[in-house]
Length: 419
Image 1 (tube, helix red, strand yellow):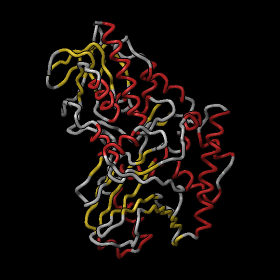
Image 2: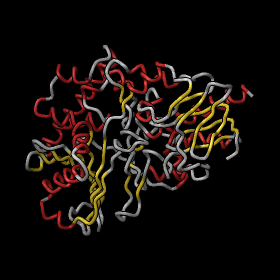
Image 3: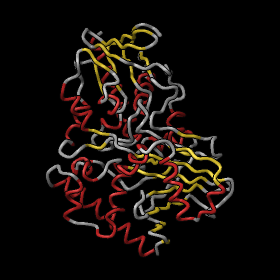
Image 4: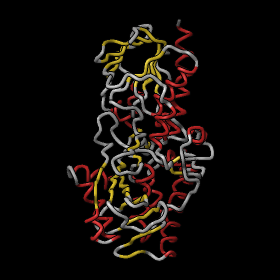
C-alpha cells in the first residue's frame, strides 16, 4: 500500500464500499481497509450451500420506489419481486392454521400498533414504544405485536424510541431481491480495490491528518471515514488518540444494534408444495415466534427469522439452540415428518460476530437525536458512515449506501482543502 492517501476508509460494508466507489469515480487517492476476509458486511448472500440463493443479512429493497439499488439492480440484471404483502399472512396459531379472517385481524393489530407508536413519536415526547402499547393494548395479539416490533427494529418495545421509530420513512414499497441483496452490493462494487484481512486497531488524529494502525503497517491519510457498526465503536475495538468527543461515545451507545438472526433449513425434496415464495408466521405459547420465508422448488429452503430478546436468549443457550428452535417451529406447523427430509441447516450469529456486533441500529428511548451526532465531522478529518448515520432511512442497506456517498464527498473536500 502507498504511504499516503487523501482518504482512508475503515470498513467495506455497504457504506464503505459506496464511499470508495464515489472516490474512485472522481480519481481520488484512497484506501479501503476491511478487517474480515470479505466485503459487504451485513449484506451477505450465500449461493451454493443449499442450491438456492439466500441472504444472511439484508434482503429487502426497502422504500423501493426511491431506493438507489433498484436502478442498480436493473442495470446489472438482478431480479427482484415488485410486490409488497401484509406482514401477517399464513399464520399458524397455537396448533392450527388460522382462518384468513383471523390472520387479517392479526395483521390489523400489528399495523395499528405501528401506527400508534409512529403517531406518538411525531407528536409527543420521546418515550419507549412500550408506553404507547400499554395505553392501547393489542389484547390477544400482544405477543405477535411485540414480535413484529422486534423484527422491524431488532429491539423490544421497551427499548425502542418513539421518535426514532417515527423518523423512519417507510414508503410501503418493500421488494425482496431474488438474486440476493448482498450479491447485488458486491456486484455493484466489483471494481473497487479493497485491502481484506486488514483490521484497523488504532487511529491517531492528533496531527494534521490521520494515522491508522494495521497489521500491514501504518497508513497515513488526510481524512478518514469510519464505516463500521456502532457496536464495534461502542465496544472500543478501534481506539483513538486523542479520544473521541464524549458526545460521540454517547451516540454509539445510544444507537444499539439489537438482535435479529436467521436460520436456513434446506430439504432434499419438496415438503411444502408451494409454487412461489411464501411467508409463514408460527406462534406457539412458551416458544419464540418465528417468521419464515419459504423458497419453493425441488429442494426448498425455509428461512426462519427470530429477533429481539427471544433471539438473544437462544444465542446465549449455546451452539445449536437457535437452529433447534426454528426447526421446532417449522415441524410444529408442517408436521414432524419433514424433519426426515432436512438436508442442511445454517444459522447466523450477527450479534456474536466481533466485527459486526448485532443487527441494525435502533435508538433507545429519549435519545433519538443522537443520530445527528454521527453526521458531525471531528477535527476536520474524521467522518462516520453507515446505516446508523442516517436520519430517515437508517437500518437499511440503501441508507448505508447513501451515507457512504455523502461521507466521501465531505471527506474529499476536507482533504483537498487541507492540501
